[in-house]
Length: 461
Image 1 (cartoon, rainbow, N blue to C red):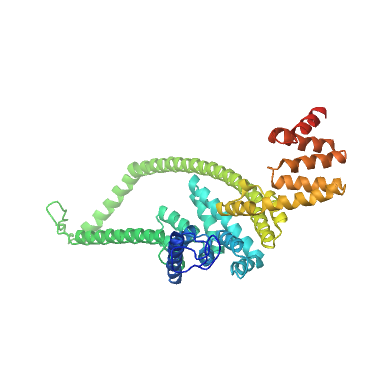
Image 2: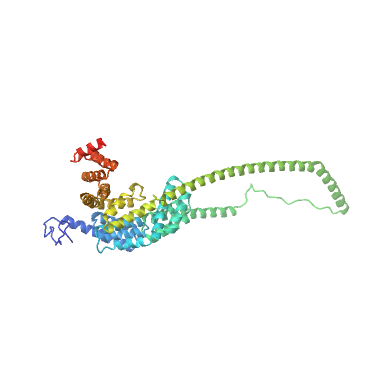
């Protein structure tokens, strides 16, 4: 273990043998960080990934220089489908330790397959889109997007959990089991997945019990005995006559009487019945036609709504994949990180400054932007200022003006950078740019030694 102040190797005592600083608390924090790292490693080995994340995050919180814990945290994030968070941890790790750090290898492996990386970033965008749909109540659209996400990246745990939650909301218990099983296959002790699965099992057991009770009830009703209210049909006492002639006469009389009844009673009623049936049919067809008209109107409205959603999705797709899309922004932040790792701090600073941090799609990307900016802007501004001063002293004012302007963009807290930028532009007769940088001095550096000259120039031009 090294002393945090002088870098000397520490002994068993509570003070550094070289500089004498008290290192007792420092040793305890290092030991605690290592204990959390070991706990996270043990959990990761048994695929308790969510538990491993908590332990490893605590480890790097206590000791940000714990490279092993940070690299393992990135690997766990990657296994859970959170590639952007993994890259963020590895870039920080590479910044803390540049030599013999496996984080560089991990970053190269991610960047070597650009198509896969783009698919992952598109999947993250679709997940965010589906999350917005769910918040707005468009659950069907959310399910459609989430199905695409988990098809491309089945290890993205948060997408699987959201899909299962939407299935549970709709009462589709068996469908919800599949994404939850995928989550538990990746992260065995995921708390939310276990909670959702327990809710599903309880609902299915309850439905099974209800079905058993209903079946027993029907069997009891089938076996119920007759009571006094039941109708029993008695046997008829009619007997056929034995005389054949009387039978024939009765048959003829029956035919005649039947024909008369048909002519006088049944036929008019038949016609009346046909008319009523026709009127009822006509009314029914009219109602069906009205209902179909209503359905057509509803379908037309639904079609218009789908067209509007299609236009909105196309607009969002353009926002994601266009020149200023979030996919391009993620690529730009990774390129800036590559420049920083290649020790091109000037290029890294200018690349980061060219990115609108408010448009970055995730908090981890914004965190990476902040880390790169704080690590590069001051040194980049100093390098550009030195180059510009050399060009200014050699009377190469056009090149000097461009270098001073870039330096001021990297660090706008230096009055001399704005002053020499203004003087360089004035030397090449670019009055508007010279006045702009003198105005910076007038507005921001009122106490500097350049204020009087800058104020006079602004007032005279």
